[in-house]
Length: 159
Image (cartoon, rainbow, N blue to C red; front, side):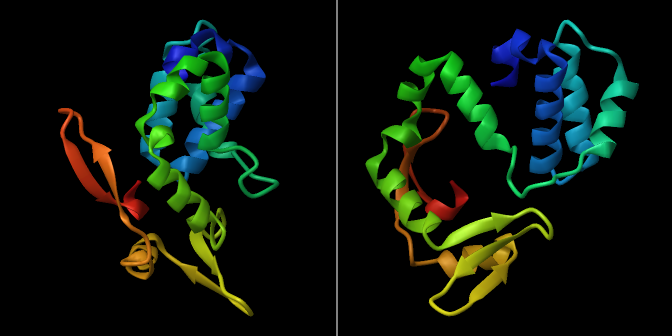
């Protein structure tokens, strides 16, 4: 999506936001830095690996989830609305209904990175593998289409 948006990230402010998204989504990992540098090289105003590294290692978040992968999806679908109509998961009513049900009780924290389940009088903090165990049997398997065009059922939590 970032590559297809191309010149959108020629603006310094937008490029910084892309760096923050990658940093957040990869938990500040070295792989995230490599991805950010690789993507940055494709933009006209690439200023070298030092600039990329400096931004990557100075990312801080003032508000949880202020900017994350959802922002990238929003920019992409604003620029290419026809792509949203082609997204299998957005056309899958079962997936979208399950997602709405899931998001009523579960959300993600940045620091520490974990998932929070809201119960009636308490909350429960879980790591991803614990969330998978908790979700087992609570949400239906979702029909998806794999890369070869074959139907495949997948656990909702993996989507």
